[in-house]
Amino acid sequence: MQTIKLLVYRYNPETAEEPFMQSYEAPFSGPGMMLLDALNYIKWNLDGTLTFRRSCREGVCGSDGMNINGVNGLACIVPVAGLKQPIKVRPLPSQSVIRDLIVDMEHFFDQYRLIKPWLQAKTPTPERERLQTPEERARLDGLYECILCACCSTSCPSYWWNGDRFLGPASLLQSARWLADSRDEAMGERLDALDDEFKTFRCHQIMNCLEACPKKLNPTAAIGNIKRRLLSRKS
Image (cartoon, rainbow, N blue to C red; front, side, top):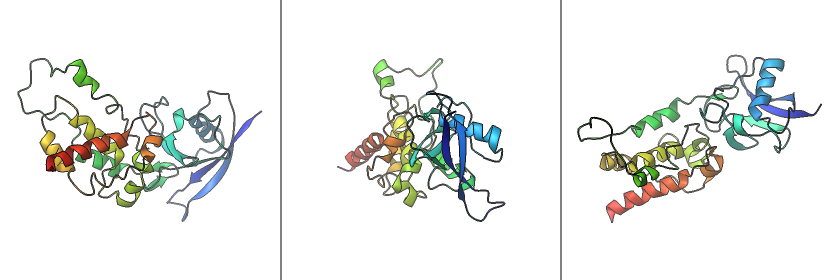
């Protein structure tokens, strides 16, 4: 039977002083096998102590973001076929490791909350709904699909070095989504909050985020649009 070789990052702060890479082998079940299938096999059949997040296994929830052979991605939608072996699986970079492949996402979501990711409208609430034209709705395409897996932000060197002040690609992509929404009436306040040397302008367009995004979104372009909006206010 064909097998897959993996090297998986292991770290339990309660029992170990340093992390290490542990070798495993899992049977290859066919072309449709995803990395998550291999990790599940290891956990269910070889080593129940291996710890990682997972949920929908359909690339929708964003739970199983991890670093796979040096590139961030979702284990549930990364095919095993074609990956160089041994497949090196590590937690998302630059985040504090809670255990094995699980990282602390609290700071990431704190930054997301900072951009106030909800509709802000000052006009009275209509009886039924706030309407958009098809053209206005189309402006949200490529922005709203983000699943907050953090693959993009944790692939960004600017986020590694300035994560305490730079909002990162994911939060800025969401900011662009609300700036583009015709129903939102807080553009001035949103731009004021983003007009900061670190929050927004620490993006240097390295474009790692574009490669890492499992939904094929373009945070770099979204951040560029925010920058142009901010600079146009000063001209």
